[in-house]
Image (tube, rainbow, N blue to C red):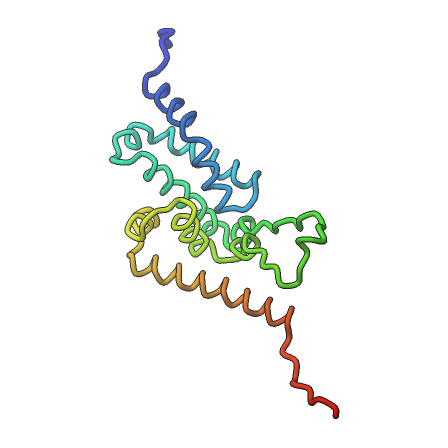
Length: 182
């Protein structure tokens, strides 16, 4: 039976989502690399947040709690569905429109490379470099040790560097020295 008065818990949830939607969507988009996948991920997460709103609202940091739920949803979906879900978050980044000034064989499309990282490595980079969280905060969000955060970040950055090095080598192959003809 409704009394005609809005539920105060629901109302504060709506205020929270209104205030924080853009930041949460940005995180979801960075994690998935695709607008539609980000919207789906965020919507699924927010349904779970609503169901747990009293607990979320009482948390020391509701943002951290919701961000952890978002990451758990992304990583949990991958575990549940196996390779199919893993590939769903590896949405190919469309090629940018051809621009002769930008088109270069040495150009590293960093975003495309971040998207092919394993989800946990991608999550660590997004939380560290886009959300500006500390290693301890990332460890808390992901439910892992700070050592795991450091190793995942190191592996991700090494992968990105290796790709950049290979791209550079393909663009500028080493030429054998030529002798001058006298």
